[in-house]
Image (cartoon, rainbow, N blue to C red):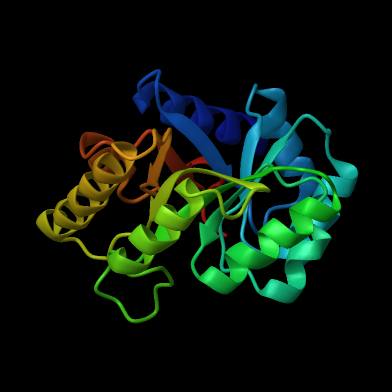
Length: 219
């Protein structure tokens, strides 16, 4: 019972810090289905996973009104396993993966929501499209390509650092790109910020945040 109370307390603490217009994606990767169900029972409906196999296993046993977001790097050969049910793929980081999502969505007669993942961090380990690639793909999308995806917006991960100015600079850059693209065709989701930097992200314009350890605790 103590862990449930702790989980509820952490979840409520996070909710209190979020403005009404900011979507919470509860990052449930590596956590058991029964723990996710506890957060679901508190009213949370949007959850983020970063591995396809884990996501499929949880989809099978958890309530079907959960909106699952894939937030980790996605390989083209794994898209088919989630295409039937995924709500949003936040980590579209190449033309190849975008084409595959479009192809698999068409098979199921679906439109899959996506975010284009932009490389804003100065770390080599981070995935993402370069800004010029984002602009090119978005132009193609606006022109009518990729008919079975809906580009809702952009996602980015800042450099993992205690330097708030660095993080702020990267988030601001992504917000500027978001506003620029929105002038061509309205976008609705700017996903940036995790447990360690989501308040900075919100200050820079984020309206969707991906929070795991601040809710579920450290593994």
